[in-house]
Image 1 (cartoon, rainbow over the protein chains, first blue to last red):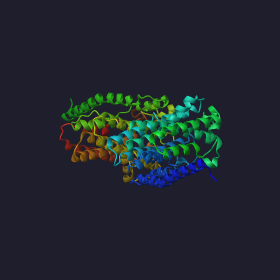
Image 2 (image 1 turned 30 degrees about the vertical axis):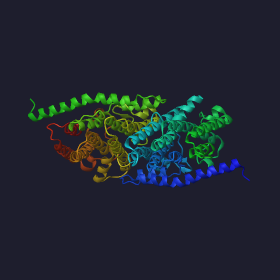
Image 3 (image 1 turned 90 degrees about the vertical axis):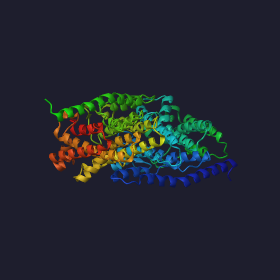
Image 4 (image 1 turned 180 degrees about the horizontal axis):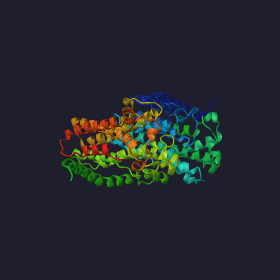
Length: 305
Length: 305
C-alpha cells in the first residue's frame, strides 16, 4: 500500500503527465503549422521539419505554458512563444551535433540532421529555424506590441552572445582545459539556463505578472536551469545509451569538466537537490497548493533521459 | 574636355560618394557599439567583430539610409535598421564561406572567419550575429512598436526559409544540375534579392511612405536585386582576383549556372541594363531631379568588385 507521501507524489506526477499529454500535441501541431509555408526550397523545409519532429520532450514550450497556468492566466499567444523557444532549441541542437562541434551521429535515437541532409543544409536548416523563431513572434495577436518587443528582446538576450551561443563557445573552450566550479556554472547559466529562464520570464510577461512575482519566478528559473544541467551531467555518468538515446560517457572520455568530475557524484547529487529546493521555495509566492512549475522542477531532477 | 553627359555622370557619382563617405563611418561605429556588450565569451565577440569589420562596402545599410533620404524623412532609428541588415548579411557570408559550403579561405582579400577562429566558432559567430540583428531591432526609439514588429517580420521573411537561406539551399542544389533561366532567377530573388528588397521596404516603412510609393520602391528593389546578381556573375567572368578580392572564375570551374553561362556575356549585359532601366523608371514616383537610389542602381550595375 502507498504511503500518504507516495500517494501525493503519484497524484502530482499524474497532474504533470495530464498537462504534458494535453499540451504536447498542440505544441507539435503549431510547430508544423509554422513550417507549412509556401517556399521554393522544399529541401530546406524538409530538413527543418525533420529536426523539429525528431521527438523532443518539449520541456521549454511546456514551461512557458506551465508558467501561465500557475499564474492563472490564459493567452492564445502563449503557444506561439512556446514554439519560438522550441525552434531556437532545435536549431541549437542541429548546430551542436555538427562534425565541427560535438560530431554526433545520433540524437534522441535518430540520425542527426547533417547525417541525413549533409552539413551545408544542416547548418542552413539551423539558421532558418532561428529566423523562424523571431519571425513567428511578430504574429502574436492578443499581446500589446510593446510587450511583444520585450519578449523578442528577451529571446535574443537568452539565445545570443550573452546567452546560449556565448555559453556554447565557453563550453567548447572548456573542453581543452580544467574549469573551476564557477566557470562551469557560467558555461551552463549561459548555454542551458538562459533559454530555460526565458520560458519562465516570457510566460510572466505575457501573463502581466507583477515585479515581485516575476523576480521570484526568475529565481525559480535560475535554479531549475542549473538543476537541469547537473542532472544531464549525472545521467551521462549513470545512464545507459539505450535510456538516453545518445552516446553516454562521452563527457568522461573527453575529460570534460562536469559537476560529477569536479564534485564527485554524491556531492553533485546534493547540489542538484539544493537547486531543486531553492527553485521550489521561490514558488511559494504563487500561493498554490499544487504548482505545475514545482512538478516540473521535480521532473527535471528525477528524469531518466 | 568632358561632355555634358559625362559631367552629369561625374556630378552624380560625387553625390553618391559624398553620401557614402558621410554615412559609412556612422554605420561602422554603430555596428561596433552593438557588439560592445558585456559578455563572458570574449572569443565569440571577437569572432563576430572580425567579420563585421572585414571591410564590406555596406551597400545594404546605405540603401536603407538612401531610401529615407529620397523620401525626405530622417529618423534616428534608420541606422539601427541599417545595421540589423548588415549583421544578417555578415552572418550569411561567414556561413557561406564554410568548408561544407563554398569553402572559401579569403573574402574581401582577408582570411575568412573559420580560417582564423575554426569552423565551430565561425558557425556560432554567424548564429549570434543573426540573433543580434533581431535583438537590436527591439531597441528602436522613435518608431511605433507596431511598425517595429512589421520591420522584424519583413527581415525574417527576407532572410529565412522564404528568403535568403532558402535561396542559398536552391543555389547549392543548382551546383549539381543545369538550371533554367527561371530557376536561376528564383535562386537569386531569394538568395540576394530578398535582403536588398528588405532595405528599401524597411526604409519606406520607417518613413511612413504611402502604398503607391512603397509599391514603386518594391519594383525598384526587385530590379536592383537581379541587377546586383547579374553584375556579380559578369564580374566573376571578366574581373581579376585582385580587383574582386576573392577567387574569380570559380563559377565557370564548377559548371555552375550563371547569367553569362545561360545567356552568353553580351545578353547578360543587356539584361543587366534592362533591370537598371526598370529600376530607375520606378523611381519617377519620387519626383526628384537626383535620387540617391537611382545613383545606387548605376553603382550596382557599374561596380568593379
